[in-house]
Length: 158
Image (cartoon, helix red, strand yellow):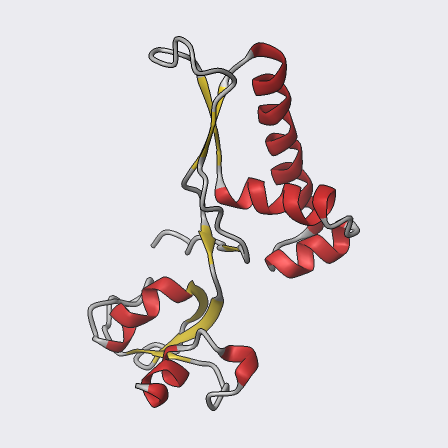
């Protein structure tokens, strides 16, 4: 079985996802695609002025992964500014929150993105190891505020 994707936690999703150097000749203009996690790395490090260790902790990734994401983002932004390319913000391996889940059949545990928890709750999601749909949120959040995105808490509110 393939290893589950390591999700990068992103707190800020921008409302504007294109930056265009000029209004002339937009058609066919080259563009750089900046992933949401790359934008988050720039926001945390360069805009908020946090140390790389703090940034990595907020995104729930290692410092070396954060460094690679940050360098990639800075390279794309510099290329766009120097060479007059469009910056298009989209995609990546990001989530608004990361939740631990567990297969009730084989006991396998992994981290899953919040956006997939509805499919887990509706039994439309299967274990990476054994293929069972008996997968459950493994969080002891009990609807507490710090776990506001947990589907167990959302279910209690509705």
